[in-house]
Image (cartoon, rainbow, N blue to C red):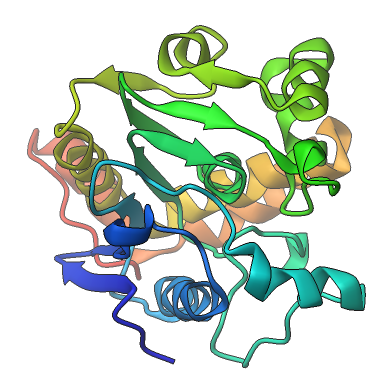
Length: 262
């Protein structure tokens, strides 16, 4: 379900996915959701892809949902239906999330769904002009893209309730102080810095990276004991992989490893 509102490009082993509706401050409509879900599905399922980069064209990441389109979805009490090749970018079903890591580059206004996509991503690079806000309570609704579950895990209960229940804006410096974003850069530099991070991840052993992500997610959702109890079961198949052999040889030969994902 291709859409000009989402730019999807392959750069080596990295899939870049860009909001491309700057004239509307990248307001997130249903076409964009389906196109992004399709891109996440491609990233998750394509063995040649190892990391995703989510970004936005223009001065702002997104002003939030295109409410006239999403209102009927929320009123139905059901999430949108997706095709088999799609993966929900908000990761609401923990059993069907994208298996590859996502780096997000953010700038300017990052309201509602932009903040939720950030919390569903794994590493966040932000321009120092970024402005985060959850405005749902000022519109008579509440966030349903994961914010009520993930935000307190990221920044603590009190901070989360402050921003979720007031609609106050969080500036970039505060997001960095609280650990919500990992790096702040000058406006216009966020994409390049995020791409460098994504490419660095893509150079690592793919099965190792995906195992890290799966184990950490299990700990976050099911608890530390659940993740600890399966560590050695999960590393066993990696030990017999070609990438594990390549990693050892590269270490002994004092050279950079070249992983194939096998």
